[in-house]
Length: 297
Image (cartoon, rainbow, N blue to C red; front, side, top):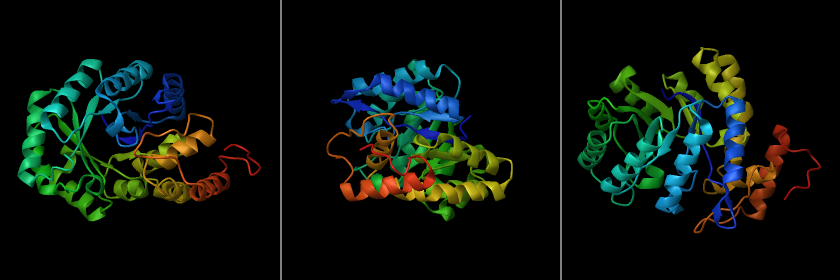
């Protein structure tokens, strides 16, 4: 169900409010480009600073705009299990294909606490669930053995693995086999993850080059690692500049340069520094996304 290049889509803002017109245009852009799935209200979507009302609205808009053409995997995680259940129930009622659930942040639960957290959600909401492990953001690493225990619940169908460790990815695939779709949680390891048996990537870079990201994972899926490797190396400089500062600051700046939405982010995030904006422009020009004489800010 969840595979290929799934975009961790930004939430565009305009003067502090969600820019629904720009958001709809972004979704159309992805559908035309061959993106395999849309992931709203994740880290890249600035879920941490969306109100509950905005969170629900973005998910509802995504489902409506996508219209069943690709899966919608909605971010519904929280460091409160009850809040995660509430958000996941709403997502289900909105018609999503599944929910993406980050490990509880700040609380720093034990491995048993992580197991009980996901068990409670799986039992409370009959919806396909994808776990999300990103210790650099949350302060806790969910061990492959804990993930393997969670495969006992039929509606836990995948994991977004964001450690950047191919050893951890390999351990997950060894322990869970075909039972769980393992998706790379960062663009740098998308191709290596697929090379060892992963199902794809939930991508930041796909926000600006959706077609090329989809082509890369499609090539890897059919075993054409020669072409997949060429695309990986072509995309690599974009991966680098899109993480010069905290995600989604650089990718929103890139989308602004492409005229697709504002570079506005919510505090405590702030706009990209002038120094890094110049680096971003240079990489985008080298890739062919901007003309060398581009005057866009």
